[in-house]
Each structure stands twice: as structure tokens, then as C-alpha cells.
Length: 245
Picture 1 (cartoon, rainbow, N blue to C red):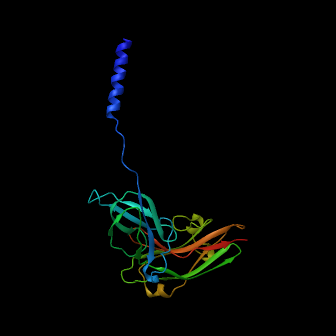
Picture 2 (cartoon, helix red, strand yellow; picture 1 turned 60 degrees about the vertical axis):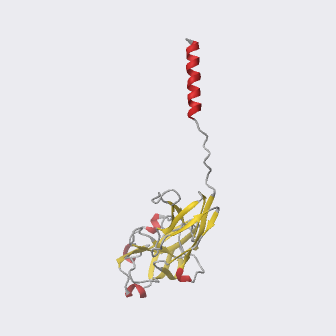
Picture 3 (cartoon, rainbow, N blue to C red; picture 1 turned 30 degrees about the vertical axis):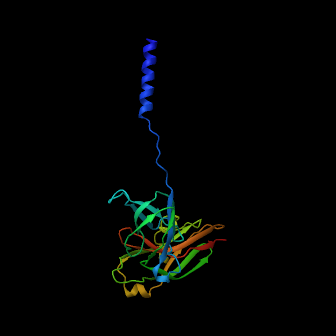
């Protein structure tokens, strides 16, 4: 009986070894990096964004005409990079941000490949000023769309604040971003608009206030304007540091 069991075990091991193949597929050996350049800035500066505020959509065409896409998230400085891609022929499209649509391009990614995309934001935040009064932060600014015809409806303007430099719609302290009207003063940390662009908006200075910041802390803040496009995406201001004494 023991002999029979030993023979059976040996045959099972041989069968398993016969079915086992060495995976010789090479790992990712290439990458893709670049800048998201603001077309309205004369090619001299990147679009102001946040981590994942927009993405680079990659579709590898080497093996399929209808591939499953993969995405590279943007960095706050308007750059992007993925160093773990397979060499191949790709269709590449800037995707998911508050900018006018950009036609895809096709290129070969082999080693670390670089390409910059020039995009036109829906709007810029202009004339931003801020003032800290004890624990209340006041921000004033205007909205300036480079292209006004066909602009998606504006949903709202909103403040964003965090305790580190990663700040935006996806990284903010919610009580300072989603707060409601503040009593009789009608002070908001956001303002609903839900309207098409018009001349009233063109001349208006928007004011947002954040109250009850904690003393002894350093914050990083910015403002944004959100659009009713497919992604409900936002254009953002520069980030500024607020030291609450």
C-alpha cells in the first residue's frame, strides 16, 4: 500500500512539474513623462492643477485596436510621469481636467519617452489677494476665461485649504470648503453660481472667507472655479501659505 501511495505521489509531482512553465515575460522597461503647458501663457508655464486634477490617458495599440486604457495622474506643478510602462505604440490623450478638449496623438514609447501637451484651461483665477484677520482668511479674485464661446456652465467658486502643500478639490479640510452661510454676515467659503458665463461675472470680484482657523498652525490655501463638464472639473489658483499666530 505504501509503495502504491509513493508511486501515485511521484506521478502527481511529475504532472505538476510538466504543467509548470517559467514566466519569461519581461517587466515594464519604459516610461512616459512631460508637461501640461498652458497655451495662453505663451508656452512659458504649466497649467495650475493638483494631484490627479487631470490625467494622461494611454491606450496601447501594439496588440489591439480597442485596448483598455490606463491613466497617468497629473502632479500639482502640471507635470506627469509613469516609469512602469511596456514599450509599445500608444494613443495618448490629456483627459479629465478643466480644459478644452485636445486631439489624441499616437507615439512610440521606448525607454523614458517625453512629450509635452499644450492645453487651454477653461478659466484663469486672476487678481487673487488674501488677508488674514486673526483666524479669518479672506480671499478676493476674478475669473477670466480665455475662450468664452461654448464655455461649460459654471457650478461654483470654492476655497480649498489644507495643512500641507497638497491642496485642491481632492485634498482639503471639508469644514472649510463645504461650510454654509455664516449667520447674518452671509460669509461663504464657497459661492454657488450655476450659470453660463456673462458680463456680470466678467466684472465681478468674488469674495470667499474661511473662519475659525486654528491658532499656531500653518495652512496652504487656494481657490477654484468648477465647471459643469463631464468631469465636474475645476481650474485652480496658485497656492499660498497662511501662518495663523
